[in-house]
Length: 119
Image: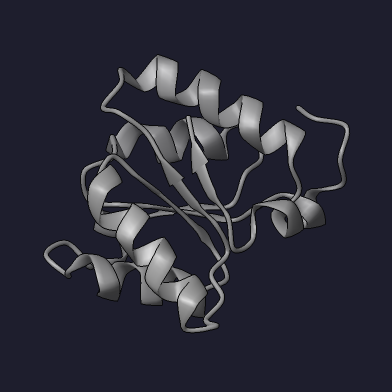
């Protein structure tokens, strides 16, 4: 695990298209993670998913790059805040885990906030 105290780690919300197994793999490493499927939000549109992540103070992780790049711009131009948008091409679970851990162990929740991150 990283050297940072847990309170500065980002809390994550995994979008509908992200591997469900990734949530458990991250939890086993001490991270606070929710999946869309665990909170019965499958089928909500991207704006609703990001809005939920914001209410829960969570960075969202998604493979839906194009839509979330647009949503990031909309949030920033309307002076709305989010807790981070992490986008990636669809990758195997192990590779997603490796890349996410690299990001989460390098940047605090505050550093992720209002930024778009590419894995």
